[in-house]
Length: 155
Image 1 (cartoon, rainbow, N blue to C red):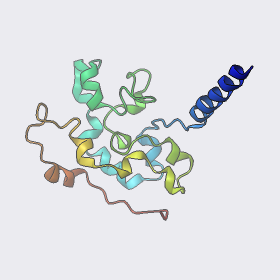
Image 2 (cartoon, one colour):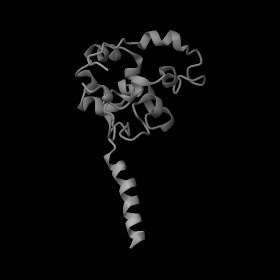
Image 3 (tube, rainbow, N blue to C red):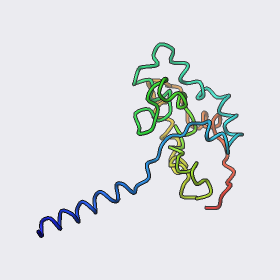
């Protein structure tokens, strides 16, 4: 009987927190556009927006997909052009992280996408490494993609 009680308590300790944790997922730039139109319009003109199209015959290569799509290999991320076409290209969430929580409650400062608190240089060099972009200079390239965030909520 005592063992059963201990096992029940352990299950509650392990299972309940796991179930109550929010699962973040990718929503795609079209959803971000609804509130962040000026950033979306800038992104549309950037090469990151068409990164998937540059793959041509390599569109099924997992090695290429991790840098030419949003969230490939992550829960809720790009799977294939047929299943998740809304996540083609290097979109907002490729740098800022999954936006599901922010979309559901945009005025809550704790709902900001994960990527708002990271070192973006680290994010960039995951793909812009010496093998694929040997001339990559973060300080120089940052100016091409940088967008100043106009806070709509107080933190």
